[in-house]
Length: 143
Image (cartoon, rainbow, N blue to C red):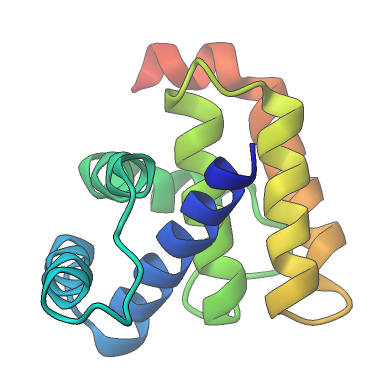
């Protein structure tokens, strides 16, 4: 499972970089893949990282709608970029990736928040993704 953990962390970093640069995440992903192929010091981008980023990109508009709709006290534009990126990745994997147990997604996203964001972020991420988990059956029908 360490490989999946690393893949999620890299997918988060790519989504974060796209947000920071104002670039499409698929462009950032292509940049990462190109750098990994041309520079032996860069680790390769795993298949699962690519699946996560490509899946997020496919559903990005809907994911942002859901985050905006269910976050309490925060507009998506005012959220810290780290939290927004973690929520985007987590929402995609939670709603659209069936082979990953929901509890694993929540735990992994909370761990990313602990590692990369503020002290308040883990509970915010857990709360919002927990709400999406509760609503998952109806959200999948709407998607």
